Image (cartoon, rainbow, N blue to C red; front, side, top):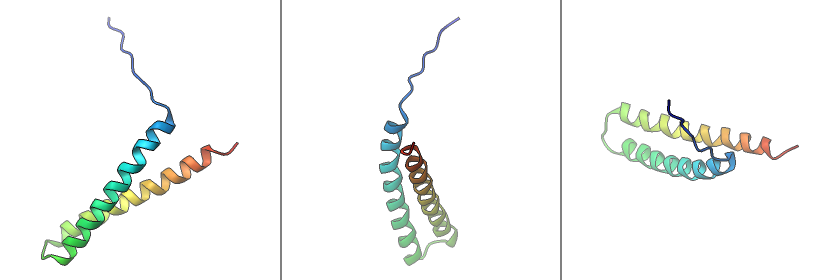
Length: 73
């Protein structure tokens, strides 16, 4: 048998890494959505970028309320 050890990170470190990545993805998807709306691109491509933008925004909002609740006693 082998023993597997896993490294666990504190929740604060993970949220500090996740937030900038979500903001970056939100900006990229929003720009791609705007460009696909202006350009003559298939409508499903624009809808996909719009849904991805909405998903990133929802994840940021959920993370905000999650970390806000952890700070209170």
